[in-house]
View 1 (tube, rainbow, N blue to C red):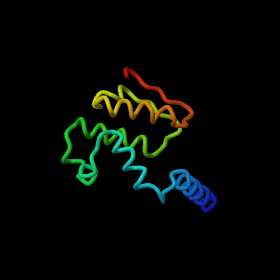
View 2: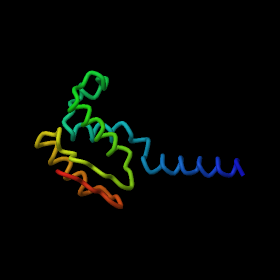
View 3: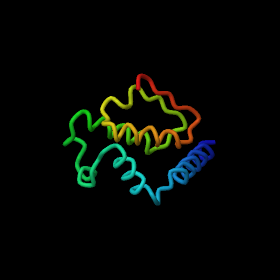
Length: 105
């Protein structure tokens, strides 16, 4: 029974990796970060070097990158400039999820 559960879990992981298309992972991450206002040089910095507002952008990028089936975003534009807000709006419009809830945009 344990083998069957482990095998099923492994198949789920492989399916998820296929969904995320790991062959384009770096490009996808760079597109999301760029949309949220990161320059190419900023993308190579350590998280600890960023202020709280930029770390919030990193957290938002992580949430967008993993493509969850449902997202609850609490005031996601708090730390974004206008360009990043517009980018986020367009990104979420074409994002195919079962539910996205934004509170206090």
